[in-house]
Length: 328
Image (cartoon, rainbow, N blue to C red; front, side, top):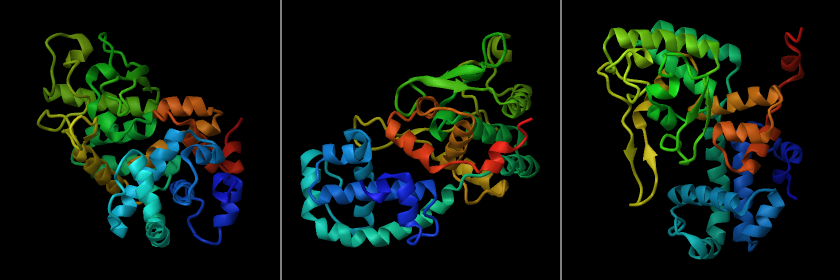
């Protein structure tokens, strides 16, 4: 087993290479690079999967992601091909790939800095700053808290509807769901609106939305809002625009407006080195500290590869002083 395949050994092996080696994105990247290196050196998907304790599909996904990005920077043609042709092409360009990886890894280290996990205090402070600086404070604060309190992805948040947050009687659906058509994977999972801070912000936002006549319904149900309208609307009453991309038949969608909005909110909140991915990781870390297991975290975040969840759990352990804080 290589150092990168074991979290404790990976820490030691990488400490001299990279100041940011303890960062989750960086360590995950190193594992993917090690997988790619093993494949181009002649190992099979099955042997690499066994070595790293993940599924064959996880290995394919990881090396595909690295190879596609590598093809853009190293200008190695054919690395986006599928199936056996893809593996043959990798091995054909073995020397070029191995030569390009070090510089690509340095770029990945720089990128990893934008996924820093903020503390709970930083998140709360950012919320106060957003409220003070935003031109739509109720909308933006609720949107910000949904990201950090639910573990939903930005695209999934953009697709949420009023009925996903409210029951017909107007009460909050504390245990809701990310429906099939909302989920990026196309598979439903539980969605929890149990954060008091989030629900307080949502209360203010929905009251303002109703007062402005945005997405009104035809009855008093759902607090007078249209249950099928998007949960988050612009000042003109429009939801975030979701656009398809990729080859015909591929189930891929992008919501650039919500990504741009979150970038703006991070800037307002003084969290320039934080991303939407940071929010999901921050939630996962809090759940781990509370004793959540890998299945619970994987189900909440929509991560089917339990190897990826185990990797996440093994890489982040809160300091003992944090665990001991306010126990009694």
